[in-house]
Amino acid sequence: MRPDHYDEFADGYDQANASSLFNAHYERPAMLELAGEVRGHRVLDAGCGSGPLALALRERGAAVTGFDGSPAMIELARQRLGASTPLSVLDLAAPLPYPDAAFDDVIASLVLHYLEDWSTPLAEFFRVLAPGGRLLLSVNHPTGAAIGEPGEDYFATRPYTDRYDFAGTAADLTFWHRPLHAMSDAFAAAGFRILRISEPRPAADTPPELLPPRLRTGERTAFIGFLMFVLDRP
Ligand SMILES: C[S@@+](CC[C@H](N)C(=O)[O-])C[C@H]1O[C@@H](n2cnc3c(N)ncnc32)[C@H](O)[C@@H]1O
Image (cartoon, rainbow, N blue to C red; front, side, top):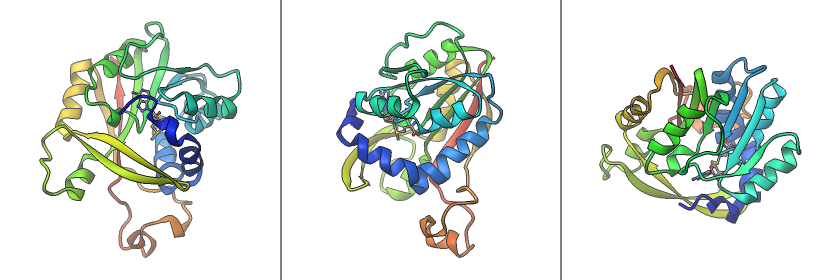
């Protein structure tokens, strides 16, 4: 997928992201919980989209820098964050323009799964993190593709395309499925250590009408959606 693919549906995505189960009540609260205390941290939001996570991190006292491959998403982020937050249009698949050890945390929410090759972004995240810094990631849970497409090989790194409706705008998104061991191999090859793996639950204050039926009734407590990691850069 081109890095500017989100230009085609940026407004619809931004609108959906603000209130959707998957973003507003599941991924974002879980990422903020994993990030914990960020006051005074220099945080790079890689693939920041229209900036809702960057805004929440800034409100918690972080000094946030963001980039995204989509100029339209960066324009929305500028409107949300104002001129004081450094924002750039950059491709995650290419070397980043930031100096070595410039950040305490790098956060990449729901973006790495668009790339077949994780070696450049992980090497760049390692380089721009200060020693002891953290990389927080969320990606589509690999088991989701295995369950949804039982005829496909779980162990293959392969693309798949899903159709979405973002506030009335249709969008085809192409992701790269990769098995769990391929993710941990890529982290280790880049020099990271895994501190936490999280399979979060929706936030406690999720409006019940947004929840899948078996969570609404209490039969289940979670669903397979995203897989999240906290890594550290020794
Ligand atoms: C699902 S959205 C998540 C946005 C934001 N992280 C959030 O959670 O609200 C994925 C974002 O990744 C960006 N993206 C996709 N491929 C990219 C690439 N190669 N380089 C930089 N950004 C990319 C898209 O433009 C989009 O804004």
